[in-house]
Image (cartoon, rainbow, N blue to C red; front, side, top):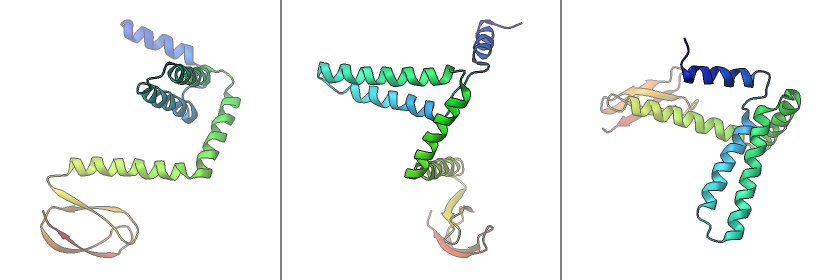
Length: 153
């Protein structure tokens, strides 16, 4: 027996069957809408505010259109062009580094009381060391580079 929320989820799922759904270009457009609206909240003039609002509504409409579109091959080609432009400007590498940095930050916070983290100078791998204080020498398990480090606290 489905509740009202489960029934709504089923109806949305049935509606979205055979449609494009979210892709990176749609997510980019939605983030752009939020950024434009955030900037718009600081603008005092009526004309610039209305213009920014119109631009954000246009981007939002385009994002919603892309999500519910049934012309999947055309939307996929648009998304591939967008991804190629990101690759040409090097944004995918930056996004990958940012994702890994956030992953490492989560690990650092999880093990803050028991471990310290150091980056291998040979391969760049993030290594987790026990919190034992003092000078230490250890090999990287990935590349074998012998590292010396000091853990202060």
